[in-house]
Image 1 (cartoon, rainbow, N blue to C red):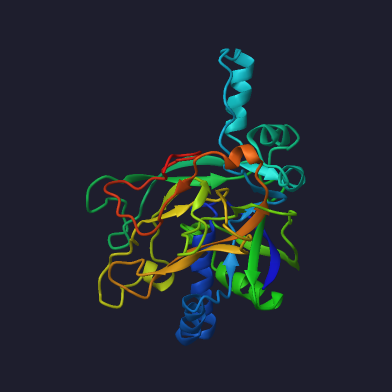
Image 2 (spheres, rainbow, N blue to C red):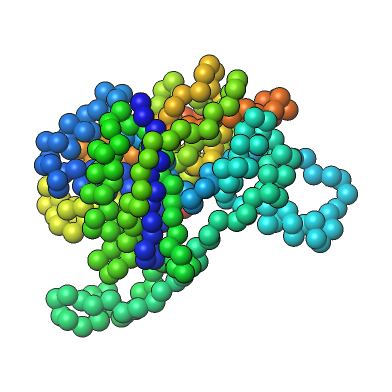
Length: 351
């Protein structure tokens, strides 16, 4: 298995946040469009045979890893001052840790050492989330009146400071050569990424690709995942993690045309997963990756998959953390009524 670091450059705003599972869907459609449906079926069959041809992390700000999901240190009985409370709020909002700070933290991960590492970590280029209101054009009438009434709708878009185009690190595990992995990603992004690519959003390009190695830690007793993961039977199930709901839609040809059975239901089933930064404790040895690709992610098309694999970054937790009662559970399909949202369950929960 090879480890590669692909450098992505963003040259526009985003209609869909950068995420491993969405990008993997683009890769799958890119293979189908370049090499045909049989090539895609053979590629997907390798996941069923436990021989994944490509494992992706979330696209991470260049030079950063996700914040590890370390439970907060016990608070003092003395109420904090306003300055201390404001400082703690800023620390709680930090989502990324620099590679340099991770190297000093990874050999003895604790809440106190994480706060010290953040004090030495500059903030990455942060995006602005903007609600954009506009009139949608009805392609049948040429006007803005909608069948259900009204002429305006609001969508969420993400923008960065483009004085210098932001770059992202995409960590990839694959048995294939680097040229093949780069070609998969270039084919995936040639038509843009995510929602509203046809309107100019999601202009993401491959700016570089290289052989690389994720940092290692002697005598590692834990690992941090670099993207959303749906654990397989046998994957570690104990640790400190945040659980989220991924609720995607069909892409590629299925996003604009009819489905094979003539239906128009493009919504996938919601899937519970561990989010990037989750810390897991393997019983013996740190695996290179966590998770699986799920079949049956669509209620009508059995062949539709959901990507739920993430590279695992080794680390070592301090003994005090290992004495906590750790979460142990089963992750899989989870029907959720009403609006879908991410459930933030960071920290430690009793089994």
